[in-house]
Structures are given as structure tokens and as C-alpha cells.
Amino acid sequence: MQKITWPAVKELLSKHYSAPLSQVFKQFRTGATFFAVGLIIIYLANSTLPPSTKQEIIVLLGLFIAIGGFIVAMLAHIRMLIARLYRFFRSK
Image (tube, rainbow, N blue to C red; front, side, top):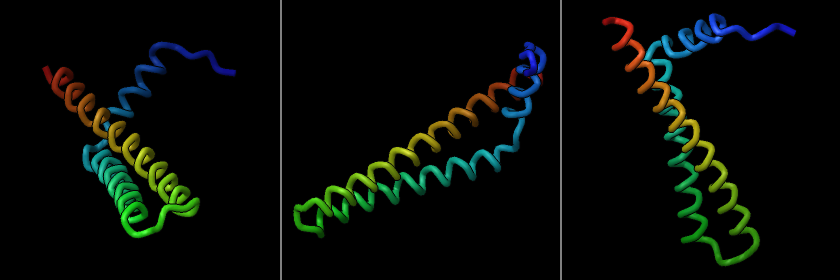
């Protein structure tokens, strides 16, 4: 097992936050799309299906999709913010 050293961690973080913003924006867009799809599933299940166990399972599925999409989108957004700050402070 390798020993984790500060220079190795610093290099990994530098590579992670030096990724092109277009790549990170694709991740954000994917997360936002899944979030929207999850919300649409929840809305359609609640407005079109009669109250039943089937409706609740579909709403739960939509909720899982929406939560997953939200987490992916927020992580990508935070990554974009940190990458911009990293580039700003690195250039000075």
C-alpha cells in the first residue's frame, strides 16, 4: 500500500481542478437533466396515476433520480467554482 504524501495529493487536486470547464459543464448539464427528469416523473406520477402502491414506487424512483441528479449537478458546480478560483490565484 502506498503512503499518501502531501505533494501527491496536491498534484491530484491540481489535475482535478485544472480540467477544462467544458468537461465539467457537461457533468453539470447531465446532473441538471437527471434532476429535471426526476421532477417530471414525480409530477406526472402524482397528477396522472391514481393513489396506489404503484404510484408511490414511481414517485420514489423519480425522487432517487432527482436526488442523484441534484448531487451530481451541485458537485460539478462547486468544481467549476473552485477551478475558477484556482486559475485566478494561480495566475497572480
